[in-house]
Image (cartoon, rainbow, N blue to C red; front, side, top):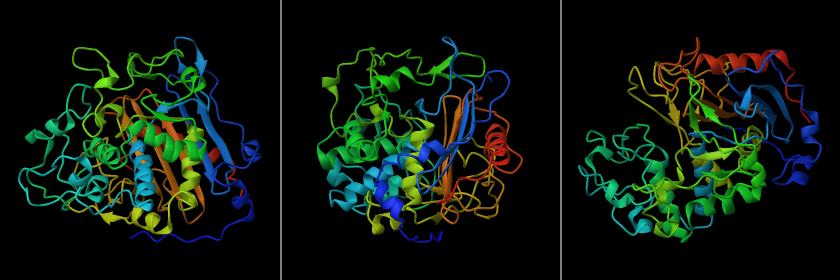
Length: 420
């Protein structure tokens, strides 16, 4: 298990509560920019547990059509970092005794969830969050509004016949629509609204899932995701909300009165649909550096970061991008880097620090949010315009070469995050 140090509270930290101190952002260093806007938009922010942040790299266009440059407050679809943020919301509900990580989730869903090969084995939230439920991404998990999640997971393609619930790790996005459904069943609230109440409002972050709950100002700053050939992959909004906040029905309609709690929960993309800025990601990272202080309990924090070794690593496709593994030790929707485990390529920074956090990969974007509890610092980044398959890998990890180059630029060119 990763050993996390319990750090003494600082007077300044207590004064800042959830929000960063008023002067923290004034300490940002000048961002690294190229002479011309890069085709790939990229940002890297370094931060520490006191709320100090430095923008270390900031370049490229958030919107090529308008020529708008990328800013640190521009929200982007950060892909699977979403899973870690959802897990924090789950832990809040655990602290409130609304959810139990080890209970049969069928109790909350109102319908029976079972692996077809192991019908007598209950499936728990801990299994879903830790990718040990037996579910597999053999079917499309982005379900239209008129497709019932309960019926969808009856498809044998949703399951790995060789993995029993509670057994071996296998990364599967479909786990998280079910996590969202469990949250809805336990609370009677829609997933997007739950995330606002449990995470974004307390942390004062202008963020949302599938743009539901983000401000007009955030919509106006949306980062358009482009494929390498220049085609739009996602979020070409130009300041207007999307026509549908969930995946539209199969006939293209978007009647939200058809949304059913615990049945339509895939619609808000809980596995990857978080829209948040780099600065907002860093705020989440600061919370992690403070061990969830005042948001989740100490017991919940310990359970959240209790890493389990991923055994029997296949040669490819363990990490989201394949070609090597960076999912080598995994907790509850959080994973560890630089594990020194045989077969792992999981140190994109290259300094051997055992960071924890989550990576992201979707719609030609790669992202990361990781903290180093030992030093009290963290890194948040994303880079767009990358190939969804076949993107060159780094020299020291299974992360992309573009991410390693971004980390190298940010680490080498600017001083460390200021400590208080």
